[in-house]
Amino acid sequence: MAAGLAGVVALTACSGGGDSKDDSSPAPSGSAASTAGTGGTTATSDALQGSWLATTDGKAVALVITDKQAGLFATGGSVCNGAAGKEAGMQMIHLTCTDGSKDRATGMVDSIDRTTMKVTWSGKLGTETYTKAEGGQLPSGLPTASLGS
Image 1 (cartoon, rainbow, N blue to C red):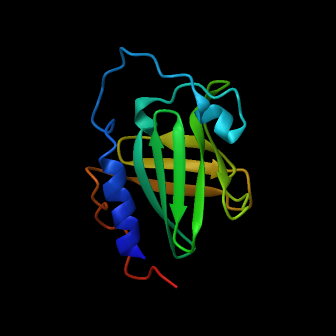
Image 2 (spheres, rainbow, N blue to C red):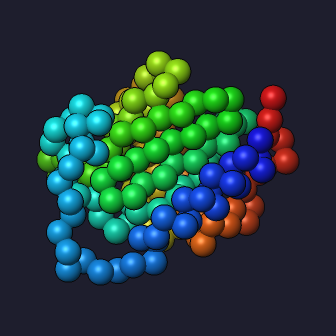
């Protein structure tokens, strides 16, 4: 499973945007917000952009944010997509999961810096802490040896 997650991270690293600091062009208004059904999501900050990794309940979780689009993949089969952006002055993430799970349907970014992001999900999951994956590489110290079913 860890190898599959590494592949997802490697693929998302090729999508660009991770190192770009060009704020001159406006964020596109498109279907990312309507995909999640929010309608009010606006452009994300550069800080949210990229691949973020967490380990929750012994499962690897990869959250990928590109422009206003968000995707989440967790070992065990959870695949979610939606939107990320500002709403009422807060950074929000709205996801729809293919397995019907509502655990990560709506998340609010509590804090973010260059390496760590804390998201509080409205479901029973609560707060998850993510580590940024730089250059498609898994961050050091990420506990992957115990992952899998």
